[in-house]
Image (cartoon, rainbow, N blue to C red; front, side):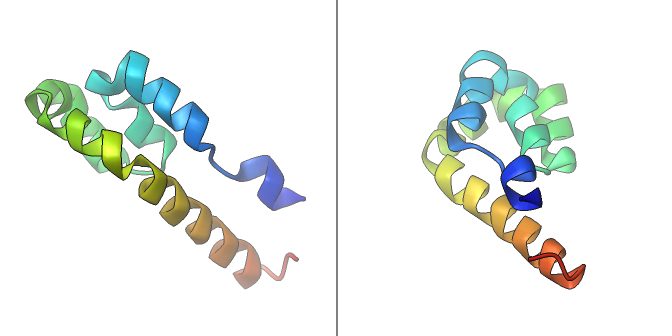
Amino acid sequence: MQYDAAKKSTGIAYLLWFFLGGLGVHRFYLGRPISGFFYLITWGFFGIGQIVDLFRMPRLVREENLKLVEALQAQGVR
């Protein structure tokens, strides 16, 4: 139940990327504040990072959700 409440959505990540990708909002959403900050100050690494993220988004979401599963297992939550 905690997983369902906290898991990240690929659809939401793409929406954030589409509308606010140059500001790195999708990176912050996916638990990557350092790269989100660099996107913010360089406008998505001058657009190149945004194009790369277009194809990497499903993998980034999977990685974040896997981290969540591991954290919940470490806490003993099923």
